[in-house]
Image 1 (cartoon, helix red, strand yellow):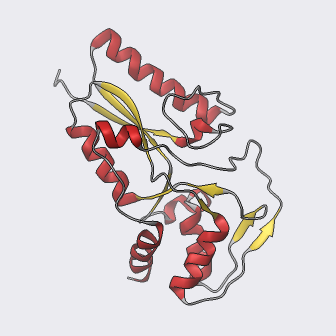
Image 2 (cartoon, rainbow, N blue to C red):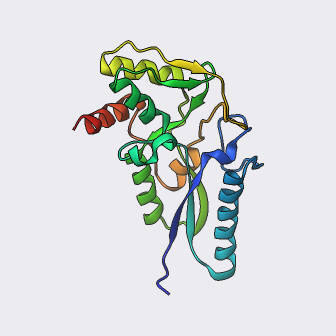
Length: 200
C-alpha cells in the first residue's frame, strides 16, 4: 500500500563450509535449521518481488559486535563475551586452539549499511555487510589485553558444537559498488568504543 522497501537481516552463516572470501554469488548449502531458515527468507523476498513487486534488500551480517548485548547472554558476540570476562579478571573461554577467525563488524557500521540500503534505488538484492578482514579469536584476546592493560590468558576447551564455522571473511566489493557501503571502524577502534560504553 505504501510502496515501502523491506530491509531485512540475513546472515554470513549461509557461507558455512565455503572457503573465504565469501561472495554473494556462492552456492549455498545449508547445514542446519538456522541457515536453512535464512535462505528461505531470502528466497521468499525474491518471490515477493517477482509476484508483487515488493522491493527488498537482504543484508548478510557477518560477526556483529557492539553495544547492548548483555541480554543476549551466551549468544552475544565473542568480542563482548571475552570483554565481560576479562573486565572481571577472568579468563575468556575459547573452543579449540583459538585459530578460528571471524569477520568482525562494529554495530555502527551495520547501522550505516542498513541506512544505505534503505536509501538506495535497488529493487531486490542481497549484500554482505562485512569488513573483508579476518581476525582470530587469539588476536581478539591479545587486542583486549592491550587495550585493558591486562595479561589474561584464555582457557581452551574442546569444541562441543557440530558444524562449527572455522573461518568467515566477507567479500565487500558488491556492497561497495552498489550501496556505497564500506566499513569505518577497525576492530581496535570498535573495541575501544565498546569498552567506553561498558565502563560508563
